[in-house]
Image (cartoon, rainbow over all chains, first blue to last red; front, side, top):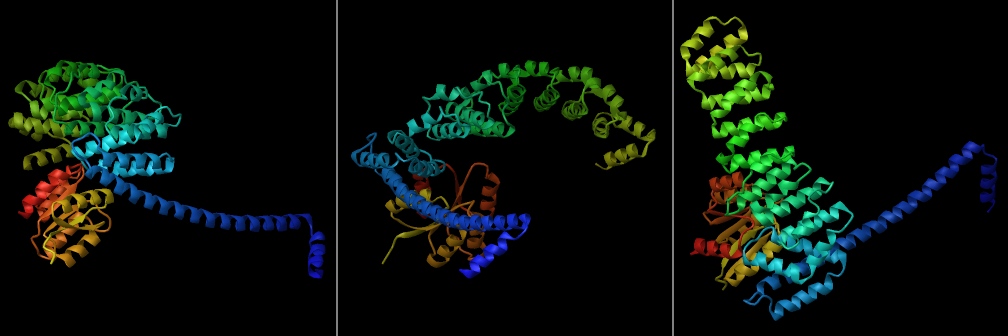
Length: 366
Length: 122
């Protein structure tokens, strides 16, 4: 007691700044002690939650497998109905519902056929479908995304209109999910979203969409001309990919029009598609536009000439053997070698700079 | 005496493993489940199964390493069916080069798997 009073007296006679530091130290010690207790509690809580998750996961896994192996010719039999009722009662809780959906998703991603259909059936019978539909009305973008993802995974087609409402959602993640839903469930018909899409399709989503489309047996694609004429640049770029993959020779006139498109990337990708189709008519337009084209387009055109060159192109090629761009120059000389080797030797003898001499040497040996 | 044909299934998706276990046990096979490649190798070495089913992408040791171990280290010709997800075409080719006998792309039908298992064990 005396010691404490002594300490108090000592503390009181300290300068104000030192007192403040001591108070701060005291508060920090209390804060750290509280934090340690909180972290201990949090760790315990998370471990408990993880254990419950594991237990529920195993329980739901068994329920799901039992449901699938109880399948008879009926839509749903008595044994299955008992399992459905049991699950329905259990998943009224959001946490449990989340676990059950993860069990179903995990299996649905890896199996197909009748069992996959049974999982879709269970998703409907357990009313999970209503929870997913409710998610579409959420204000949070990630909740909407999760809802669409579930509806897509369990192949719910009759909510098309509700999903379509989000096709121009400000968040890219939501739009991606909407597009995947359309194409996964409605195949080529699902691409109709391209008619009204105002925002861009991400490069990654374009790849995913093309991959999904290639899985279908029916490869009958609808007319892509309106999409090639779209004011949305990413729609045009995506349609160019479709044109190439699905060999859309009938849209060549539209492709020729795109050579005068205001966007450089569209013009460039169009040249690549025209090169793939080996469209000779494109050469005249490209020669006329050549001077005002970007270097990338000029290179793409010469790559096209490698496949489509004719005698009539010789003059144009010779003219570009002195092009400022190294790649264009190499391509021009390479094509000339095939077209008129004498002319190439002529140019070689008159070559003035070292870089050109190196190109000629390279061409001679390759 | 247990005369059931043994099948080792190496798959990290526990739900799929459980489903296939039920399905193949119903067909009269004894299923030994491994959650990763390491466990699969241990099961193969201990039980000498008549068939191996393995996913390509697994923790610790991949399906490709399991195939390589079976063919090059254990030097046994146990039939192997590989599961692969979309976009793993190159892996499938590698699996065949290492000695896999068949492959199934995910998602696959369990009924189709049973047919392939029966064909390989006939």
